Length: 297
Ligand SMILES: [Zn+2]
Ligand SMILES: [Zn+2]
Ligand SMILES: [Zn+2]
Ligand SMILES: [Zn+2]
Ligand SMILES: [Zn+2]
Ligand SMILES: [Zn+2]
Ligand SMILES: [Zn+2]
Ligand SMILES: [Zn+2]
Image (cartoon, rainbow, N blue to C red; front, side, top):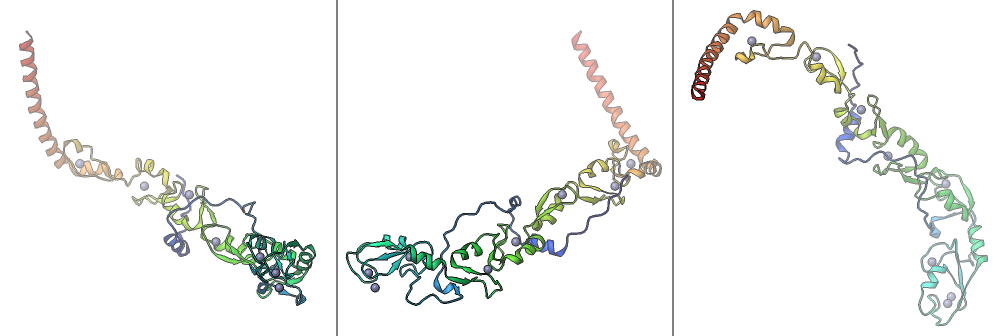
């Protein structure tokens, strides 16, 4: 019979995670999603770190939504102020700035070009990012909200959706491969993958998990093989051969012979009583048969 190395007991770390984790688990998520929803990212002026402050006479914020006009800018004919296209096109009636009732708006491509070309440092420069570049490239550098992205100092969510942990990108790799309770853990016994957080629960039911025979015969075997082992385990309690006659002792399989030897007198008494009962029943049956035979004639 083959011996297996006993499994490592689940660590405290695993137990703590499994008891605090949510009871419903879906399968581990696939590797990093290949598409992320396109986001229209906007910046407020005070979120930006200008390397050189923009000229004061050039307004770069839309007065309505207070975002930097990065992709659209429309000039009003009344007072010459700039607004995002979408903001000024929603305005009904007077100019929101000078209250002039009739005015025109025209797209100002030069203004967009100036704004896009402003030199900025990464908004995460205080966290440690040394990126500098054109404002138009800041969005793709930061890639807000996506797990993968250039800026390693942007705070984003852990790849495993149930986790919810947020860290800067360069710390998430370590979290996802070594810490995250939702990282996939492949069972070393059955090969199925589970979130790390439920691996100790999995061991409770894994059919390949090595367990010791509960009879203490010192055999360690996969859980699925236990029931067939108990049919031959020498330490399994079994019925006495005279159970039918009323012996209620259940000797261990290895002790069955010895039980018969040790209990000759008790077994003899049980057999005597059982034989008496059988003899009586036999007599009654014979009478029944005779009655039937007589009535058939
Ligand atoms: Zn706006
Ligand atoms: Zn105006
Ligand atoms: Zn004005
Ligand atoms: Zn950065
Ligand atoms: Zn995580
Ligand atoms: Zn398993
Ligand atoms: Zn056994
Ligand atoms: Zn017996």
